[in-house]
Length: 473
Image (cartoon, rainbow, N blue to C red; front, side, top):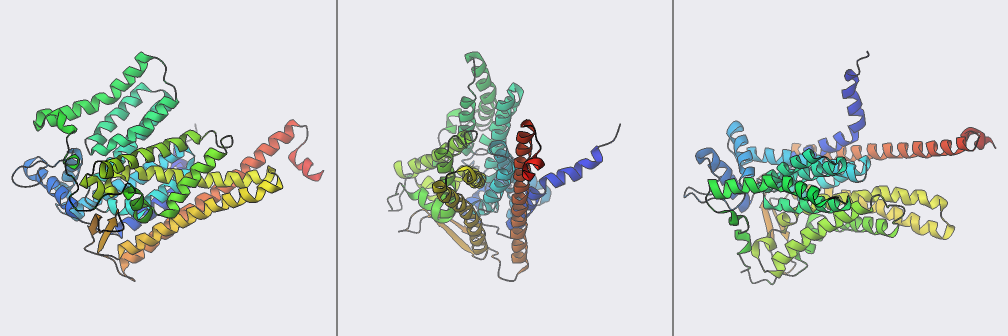
């Protein structure tokens, strides 16, 4: 029997070379930036350090527990204990989790739309300054997003395979994500929507799936809040962020999240690409019928995250959600990336459809498809430009309003200058990402041409003559 396992590494490398180039580029850009620090990063570092000293995430020597779930701090503490207790050491963990988020965004994109879209989604997500700064800060938000995307991916696989055991594993991962930070609940939205889309049958079966999914998170919350800390299970619903009202003299606008997203987080071109992507899919429902549900899932998830942040910050006038839109809306970023990245495939489909369209429709379709590709290119360019800018600044303020200096601020104690070694690493990272995207685009075109040739060959053979004969005729 021939041995094939020796060919496996080379085969895997060839099949995933574009993705590996993108991921390596993201990693290089990440390590060239930061670290970024603020008041929150210091508090969270204190909590992780306290675990090493006293075994509990205290924020000070008086025994005050941090007002967050504990798991992320225990993960950080274990790393600090092995490699040395410093913020820089902890940020290495955050950076690795950030890279993991890009990988999971790719996997979800591959599951939703296909491999090419997954690679582009990973690049858009990983190269967004919003994510890069979060992944270079000592914050548990990136860990939470990683576990959120992981339980979502496993849950989607369980739904597709109708696997009860796999769904139970997804429930355990949800408990891990939730006990890292409560924002994990946002990833339940796409999982729930797709679960309903697959039309579960039988009340008993549905209840059993719900029970096995939520049992781990209820048990873990009970153990920590009721038994270990004595705070009581209801303390899960009581958080300092929900009782701290705005005292800064600025009336929060209901557009504060939109201002943050468009001007600081993802930019106008990125947002326009995501919006146009959905509009195209919704307008040509028949052409994109297989992926319309995924577009809707991404859009509704984004809407839910943004709406909750807006309601808390502007509707209830709460200060932390208003100041910290960078954290409260962070769970929406992968879905922005997925929705925008799918625009590339839709644009190519519109290009192909111009061949069979009437002359009056060809120009608008071609223009719309070209606009989609241009928006994606501009989105990537703006991401890189702002990443380059932010790397050289020692202070960043992500405003949520134009008329006041209000928002999340970060200090960079080691900004990089032009011509420095770190800047060279960053440029190299940009090059790797672009090479990966160009390679994947080339592979996509080759596959598309082969697919067109195969369909033509199949059609002509069924008609009784070969494809080459038809060319001669």
